[in-house]
Length: 309
Image 1 (cartoon, helix red, strand yellow):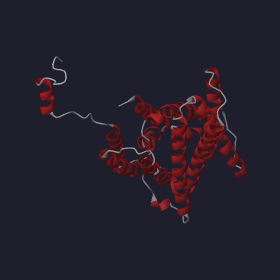
Image 2 (tube, one colour):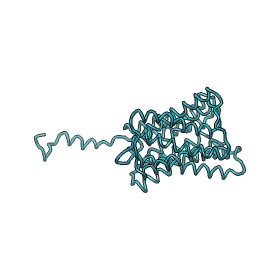
Image 3 (tube, rainbow, N blue to C red):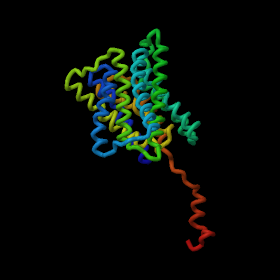
Image 4 (cartoon, rainbow, N blue to C red):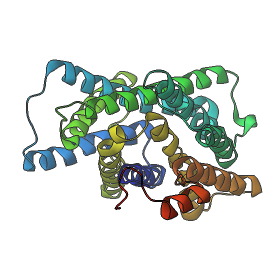
């Protein structure tokens, strides 16, 4: 397994703790989302300044970074709206349709060669994720179609974010990923702050305890987690990136069980096993070995082009 894949796996692992920090912070989801990107910007700014990586960038690239930050902010906003209508389980399932969209994008536009075992692992992992988060159909409201619509918008925004982030990092004159992520966090903050102001939502952090957990959310989920992914995203297939990110909701469920004693049943645990196994199947690429007979021939027969070898 190469280093970029390991970086994306570690990034997904760290981001999976987002729900833990949000739950401990005890603030509204929109508020936690805003301070996640805002504190992320405040952490990244001095680091980028210290590394002397703040510099002027071209207008086209700035527009792309602005778009990247905008769609990431919209991704968080749409996901929170989807949860209000259809609950966190189904909202998580629909938003992770990104894995199929990214696979299609990789095949059609990037001409990625997808192996059969990878194609089979995608629906297998998605089935496992469905079993992991579960869906309580009795909680669906009468206008659940609106929630599904917001969930699909979440998936589209997530795909747009990952594709634009990949394009930014693929630039020949690659901008520092610290600087890139700092600007993305800044533009996401503007997007979410404007929406919260229009909706009249609170910006108040109740106490120092909540402030600490929001800082941990920003440090691990917005900064370190996405630095790992940003640094590697242009070096691996787009379809594989989206697939690995299915690890986030799976581990989030696991942390909910460990830290908050979430009730679980056999299907939930079966879903975790299926999802993790499918992710391993999709990430692992067995070495292609030559047939034994060919290997023996190469050892016993002389090389006609270089008989002295």
